[in-house]
Image (tube, rainbow, N blue to C red; front, top):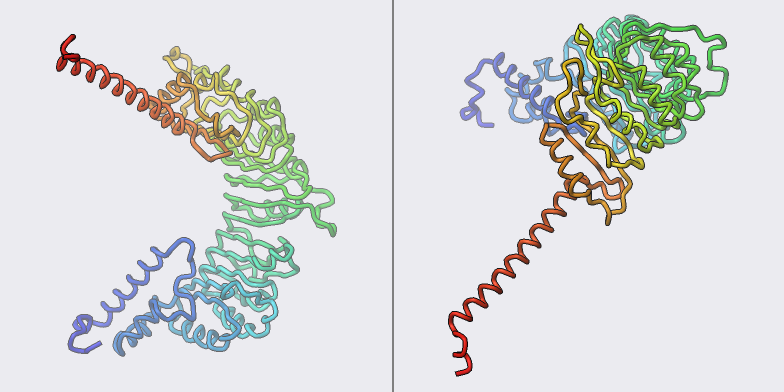
Length: 492
């Protein structure tokens, strides 16, 4: 850029540096959700490298502004490994002593498992700066993690950690890798690690509040609840494992802070072996994917938590058993039931219990008195009594109704028979007019039955209107003809 025509030349370097920093922040915050690796090496067409390509003064300012170099994102490519290591070294030097966000991925989803030694210098270089890591996001083979680790000081400022080996997972699940970051992790609050054994993860769990882990054994899960004393949110998948990884005599664990739990039981993992050995008094949200819900009533009763959100999938329980389970969740506000063999018993029960009683302290009593949202997966439902769930009319002073906001139900309906009856449609539209979101989907066509039915009856009305117009025009033509040709004059 011409020195004379550079408007930035009139500003002091400190101001230019601030402008560059704000540009970086805006670009990072507005990045595309599906492209989290902002400014990946070796791309040199976006900040901060782009600043240095404008002119010497911009380059001098950018190179001496550490805030521009705190995010290092590398798509590892064996063909330019040496160059990437050199660029990373310069990048880290320019970041000064500031905290770092490290993102590592294979370029073009290459299999890098045969190039571990080639990238070992780069991994060791990054490890030297582990005391400055604040965010770590790595999707690389297990063998790489032997070279990417914390130093003697651990990872004192690391806040979030994401570790995966998606290529290895596609080849057959967890490998034998291990992670070593040291026990000093006083700032670590969010951990998402996939395709690693829990006991091979060497970090301090004391301050972690959010955990996503895959393929744990029952024993490993109980151990997690025991060591992660600050846990608030947990999303895990459990699987039966060979090799004696289960605890021989599992201890009962009470996790006092856990509020949100999502469990997916894979293979033949025994849900009761876990649920019978944990108590979660603060649990508010439970997502449970297993064919057996038998251990849930006693678990919920023992925990005495005010569960407000429940998601059940792959359940083989009968509707009678589900209703019994739901009787133990009086504070439930949102209920999702998917991949379950449901018919109409639950909906009928919602009709028969549409009114709840209110005590002198204002507390509601009844079957799911606080339920506001219900989602039901594909089932064989009848809608004859469906509108009665929403309790039209004014209840008595000591009675209450559910505070409905949304109901979503999926049906398997013949596309040629997916039109609702006119009377039923009118009742459903009255419910929609009350501000309740109703979504009735045909899983065969993914059509919303209410909208399809509305269009169907509107088309019938339009056809009737056109027929009426045609009839009217014929009469008008006849009258006109009679006026123009009075009787007896046509033949003259």
